[in-house]
Amino acid sequence: MNLRHLEHWLALAETGSFSRAAEKLHITQSALSRSIQALEEDLGGPLVDRVGKKNELTPLGRSVLERARRIVHDARELKQGATLLQRGGLGTLRVGLGSGPGAMLMTPWLVYMAEHHPTVQVTVSRGATELQLTQLRDRQLDALVVDLRRVEAAPDLKIEHVVDMRAGFVCRREHPVLQAHPRGVPFDALLTYPIASIQLSQEVARLLVDHYGPQANPAQMTTLQCEDIASLLDVVGQTDAVYLGIVGAAREGLAQGRLVELQMCTPLNGQARLGLITLAGRTELPIMSVFRAFIQKHLTD
Image 1: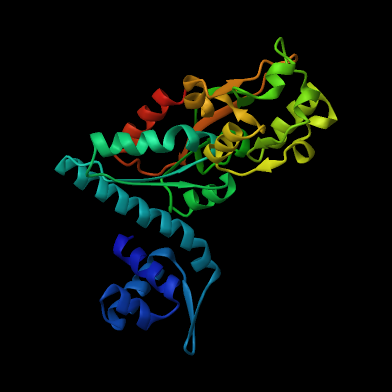
Image 2: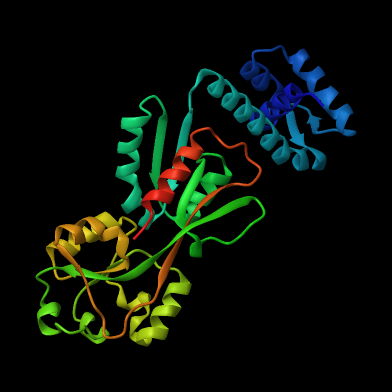
């Protein structure tokens, strides 16, 4: 089976037209027809039904499509990686970061790459974990760093656990709840104030309810919600809102003394399970080893 035949087949499947596919590939229609015919002979059946001006994928064609995409993409990445290694380069990297990892990693990662690998093309995106998983599977992203509790295991995903990070409550240093409860804050006292958090997983929601009762259900308790933890912490630093989430995401404000982690009468023993996700079987880019070492070093309490 010829890799070029697969590339021609993908062009035809994606454009739906022999003329448009030939134009995209910069070859003649007759050359494209011969290439598709050769692939059909190799696979033992027709891949496309030519009905008038329409070209429809056969059942065999549909079954071949996704596997052909993976083979062609892997071959291109392998060639790119080999070329870059021969030239001493590291290539490009497109990563998606969940809310907690984004708050802790995005700026430090961009600074690190600008200082140590200025020729590498780096793209960082933020968004819902479900959307980023789709982008990873569509090869729009090369890797994700997210809370693994929001990801279902699947054969096509390579999941690497990196670190467990504590969850807790954080407020500004002058918050009135600290004055009212200097020896420990009862959970009920927090409900007087806005609670700021990202969207929490069902597992975390159950943990909160087990710890503090039905009033801790995030669906009712959380009053300020967004996926950008940095924005939530800015609000907490300027108002009486209380942040609920990964304590490590507030490390800068805590170190500066602007923010304080609340000592609860009933401590929250929850943790975020952070990890790196890539596609199983995908050729790893040279820069990935740099990224893996970086997150293992920086994702700590």
